[in-house]
Length: 284
Image (cartoon, rainbow, N blue to C red; front, side):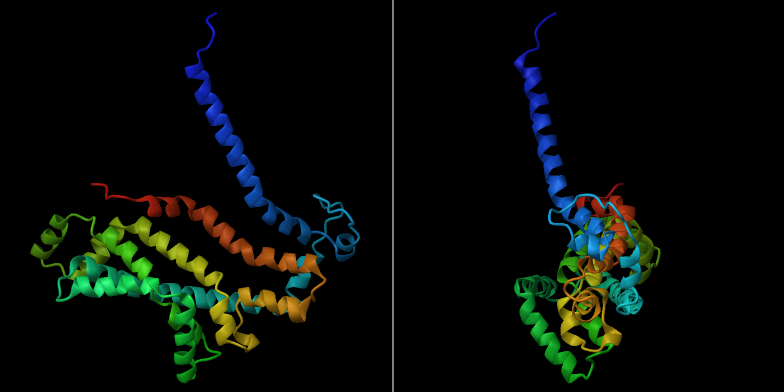
């Protein structure tokens, strides 16, 4: 048998090194989540009696998950977050889709300058925007209301830019043919543009849902009434007035319950997210 040449061995070694590094990186990334889930199944006494951390639950229990819904009104936080997320995402889609279509297809004076100003807003630190929004919402007497939570998040310059770039990839011939048939711009947007750019629209929707679900600073700043707390703010409420700072297993159970919807959302739509982000052209 002829000995294998170095040219055929080196690629295999290279792939092995890459897979080993990727596996190590996956373990590093996933370990905190595994530890969170593991701790949530440990009893309070079992967790505190561990002088050396155990990587398996010897006596798993579901008591912590029951406590997560009784120590604080976690179900109410879930409902508030669902209302906030759905309403904000719906309004944001209307605003960003219409704005992106206007910048990509319509012609009006100063369009390029206005779009450049829009892009320049991405350079402004979020902290400055939060201060401005807080003053505005307070002056409008919208603190501790859903409108106060929703309004500052109904638009995004980045999403407008992302959708605009995708809308511009649609051939002009389709637009001209639609106008010859007497199709209005709104009907062309709904029946032609959105179906073609569906992966990107779905990606924007999912990213906005994740953003709303994880929102912490703004809801914490604009609401001090427990009736309007979101799940992200509920974590702090759980820590301060629910389980206390020492009942770590119960807190981890609450965090797992809060995280599951986002994990499920990503697993279901992961292909859509990847195709929307990586989409570089329009299929004919």
